[in-house]
Length: 200
Image (cartoon, rainbow, N blue to C red; front, side, top):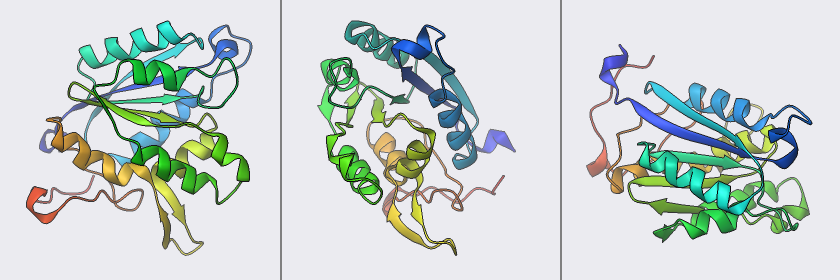
């Protein structure tokens, strides 16, 4: 059944000085893998990187992942205002286009929980045919910003950012990504939709 879907390569990057040195266990990469595996129908090949909060290292890692064929690259960590938070600067340095709406929506979601969400500098950019998104560092926040917020009975309250990701990747020439609606329902204009494929 998997041959009915485009294969996709996704880069996932955790930016953390202490986790990269083994001081504590990184939780960002497992959280990204878990959510994406549940939300996407396509077969996924993950390219995972655990790196320190060094701007040049982050930028080089993003370039390498895009050059290796990743159509989507998600980073976690390093988006706050502290001196070592340089993920956003590293991302903007390799950008061909900025996509600020992703960051705006992520902050709207986080503001439902904490007023300090306004301190987050999360953003997204396009490099070549890849979409790069800076996500928060905590697993719970990663899931909330990607999938949105739902009521106890499953009703969507606030849209997550991933609903817009597949169509964005369509527009920049990437693979056609299909999502599992119970986790995240991707939005596309009717003219951009391909025939429905069976659910996995």
